[in-house]
Each structure stands twice: as C-alpha cells, then as structure tokens.
Image 1 (cartoon, rainbow, N blue to C red):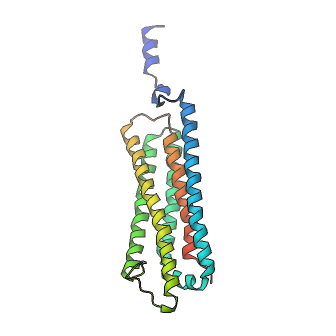
Image 2: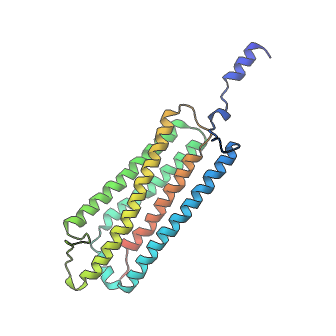
Length: 227
C-alpha cells in the first residue's frame, strides 16, 4: 500500500471511533441492548406509579362526581389546552432529535434538542402561571383554602389536592426531562463529530414521550370532566 493510499485510508472517518463502549460491555450492540432494557424497565415502574395515581383519582371522582365537576370549573382550560399543544409539539421535536442523531446530523440534532428544551420550559412557565392563579384564589389545599361554595368545600379540597399532586408530580418529571435533554444538548455541542452511539438520545426520547403521554391522560381527567 502506497503512502498516499495509507494516508487516505487513515483520514477516512471511522464509525467505530465514535462508539463509546463501557468496559463492562463486549461491544456497542450489547451496550445498546442494555440501554434499551434498562429504560423500558424504568418506564414500566413509572407506568405503574402513574397508573396508581390515575386509579386513585378516578375512584374519588366517581364517588364525588358532582362536586368534582363543579370544582374543575376553577381550572383554566385555555392554559391546559395550550400546555397540551406545547407538549405535543415537543414530542415532534424530540422525535426529530432522535432521527437526526441516528443519521448523524449534528446541527439538526442540536436545533431539535434546543427546541424541545425551550418547549419544555414553556410548559413549566404556563403551569407556574396556572398555579399562581390558584394560590391567588386560595385554592391550594391547606389552612388558607377557600372555596366559593361551602357546601362542597371538603370535596373541592380533595379535588385540588389530587390536582396539585398529579400535576406537580408530572411537572417534576418534566423538569427531570429538561435536565436530561440539556445533558444530551451539551453532549452534542461538545462533540464536533457525529456519534455512532445515538442510543442515549433515543432513550431520552422514550422518556420524553412517556412524560407527554402522562399529560395526555391528565388533561381530560382533570380539565374535561363530563357533567
């Protein structure tokens, strides 16, 4: 092999060079499988957790339907709808981030991750605005809780306890997702070569889609109670 051909061969990008195989794995494929199994195991526990939350809420709503129906009118369906649109859009940008990571388009991946992070931040801001309205009207469960209709005040307190509990837990998961997305964004910004190991971004996408799906269940359960 001539010196020129050797130089040309060495200058070609090696896909293997971008794979980061931890010492406990034999190869990148085994590492990827471990990522996938670990993430799905985690998501199963999260599904069980939120499933229990949904079940508890549904039982109480069934037992106190009339009072819950009246109490849910205090929620801002406009802000809830806006947050639904924000999270659905963020699912799209996250899916694009995973796609661009898979095809090693670093610039597009960075743009998609940045968009997802911005949308997640917008969701938290809107939720904070909605919470502030509830605090201003003394609808946060506690010593200062005041409900206009005293005859259903206890049931209304229960509704808002479940509302703040469920949406607060979801908001916490959104914040965790923002931290992970931020880590993936930092990783992409620091790595000027497209990584072959795109699985961390894909696992982040799975988590984010789960967070979005939880909200898709919460929105109608809380904001769209039928008469």
